[in-house]
Length: 488
Image 1: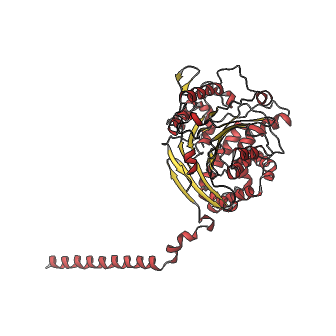
Image 2: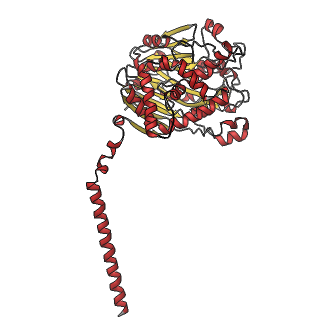
Image 3: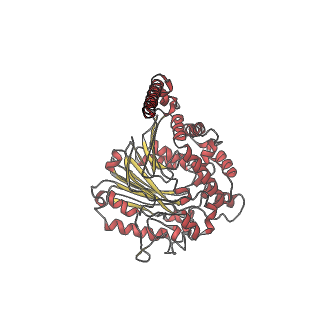
């Protein structure tokens, strides 16, 4: 009898639980059916985000930004808020540790030198970034001046500061102009299909470079659609690998040991952004970049017009500029200027020192171009950017003398590039594209060392405690696979 009672009791309990579960499911379905928030959740996002998107792929964060300058900026600030916040903190640490000037100094300088000279549309875009960042991170206190510092930090730290020390404070004026990047562009009989192939790897301090992982697809209300790599918060590429819908492609390498700055000039980052958005030819590019030049971030620009198959090398100093053009040939970049007048008047370059990275890499580029003549394509371009052959010794190496630079493993550093022994710096990513891909608004990119090796921050800092001041923000630089990215 007790057995029967227990059995009935369990059945009642089971039935009660079943009914309770059924009612719970029914109640939840009613909530889904009648609760307006469930259906309208996407509409609760800011309306500026309607055409924007963000996708993470193999270490890259690709963002699509579209609309007016304010809308593009707001989308940028919202979608990359966490990365911008992190980047500003890392940059503040890096600038103070490497220049001995604090963030307040850079804010004051950017506000006086750069902000008033920006075109209104770029002022609006930067204000939009600040607004989007604030909307996403309400507790943040960044404003448009912080973002102007971010966009112009290379110009301020490595060009304005030495100018200030020499011209105003009458100090030594130590030359701090960096030597960033390795690059090539080729066309005609030098490439496999007779059309343009261009490649570039970005050399920079790892504390910054590990964050240089944004691919921005921008559709402005005016001008051409363009695709570029950049730092979070940049309105320009910064290491300057850009393709646009007019069929133009450009990149650069910095002119090492350059000295010069013009306070009243327009910042380089605004001119580079304008070229990305409005240049439809090599002539357009030269005109825009030359207009009201401030001398900062002096570069050898490698430019290609995929409609005409013409390429150019545009060497832009402050006092001197020169252009070379061809429809059958190549140009290379290793931070070495070619114009003798520019070298003599605007650099401290010593051509007698044959151990310099700029000379060794220049010779390696020349060797590769000759060896691969008629076979240069994107796959071989990827190999070039990851190349580890040290022509000075005739051996495979991992230092500042190879195209895929690893200054962190070099006991001599790269003084002509601005880096001392074992500085945590080198090639942090690579990009390559072709005429065919530019037409489709596509490029190949690899985040991390183009050779595929990883940099592990903890191991490095253990071996080189002199750089522990970077520890709070120095991250691992992992190498991801080459990835095809496109504007869409």
